[in-house]
Amino acid sequence: MVNPESRPVTGHSEQNRKGIGGVVEFIKHHYRHFNAAALIDASEGYVHHLNSGGKMMVTLAGAMSTAEIGLSLAEMIRSGAVHAITCTGANLEEDVFNLVAHDHYVRLPHYRDLTREDEKALLDRHLNRVTDTCIPEYEAIRRIEDVILGAWLQAESEGKSYFPHEFLYQILLSGQLEHHYQIDPKDSWLLAAAEKNLPIIVPGWEDSTLGNIFAGHCIKGDIKNVHTVRSGIEYMIELADWYRNTVQDCSVGFFQIGGGIAGDFPICVVPMLEQDLLLDGIKKWGYFCQISDSTTSFGSYSGAVPNEKITWGKLDVTSPSFIIESDATIVAPLIFAYVLDQYQPV
Image 1 (cartoon, rainbow, N blue to C red):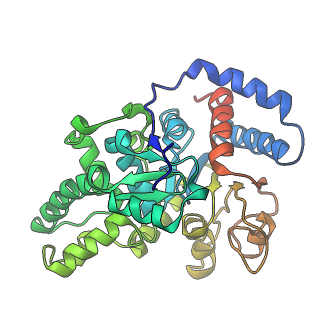
Image 2 (image 1 turned 30 degrees about the vertical axis):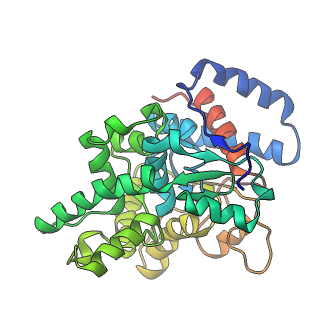
């Protein structure tokens, strides 16, 4: 049987913004050495980059949306401390899943003790496990499928095509999901991004639940034009335009949570512009920070130290660079709290 202590994830109220200052004072007093000190250094570097007129791209790998990173990231977006996001298809959709089905999620605090039979029992309940949290298939995935299929079909009938995040922006801004909201909408980072029309890059979107669903509808013939959803190559072209236009006026930083395609895809835009397009005067990323617990071995990109990126033309010798070897679900909200407390937007 599934662990009897499993329970629905409890609801939460709006984040107490007044408590951020206390968190920052705690960090400043206690975080003095090793990864703790690196967290302080990276946070101060982030604030200095913004206060110097720079902009920041945040990249999301892993299951940060299911870890409810929106509790802090949404406010970062609203505060103007994030100017673009690159994320996996899973992080894109799972923020919306959480928005409409939070009360139906099930947390398994003793997930390490689950047997194979316990896992099968979760499958039979249509619960898809992500470490200690189960995403409910019908309330989350199928609820969004019903809505986004309509958006795909409408775009196809009009001969139009959009990026994956643009379809979700349309759905969120239309209000058609509002009656399903089960968290404070202020805690949805994707809704905050939609309201600001934030640039989002989603490489490898096909490797996601909604990507699989889209492929399924193409196979069945419901959708005739596979190009109704725009591709990763088009995302790179869009990113190249955004980066070239943005660095004309300021430096762009790179705040990477985890590794994989969410980090590797966008950081390559700089050497592509410089080495493949042979463009002169392309500024390299002006700040870099990575939160990762991956080791530097066996050619691991996720565990590569920032200096390696200098050899690829991604970072400059003078680019402030930080790496925090820790759990991003612990570290990222602390850095975001620090930035929100210290950053003074113009």
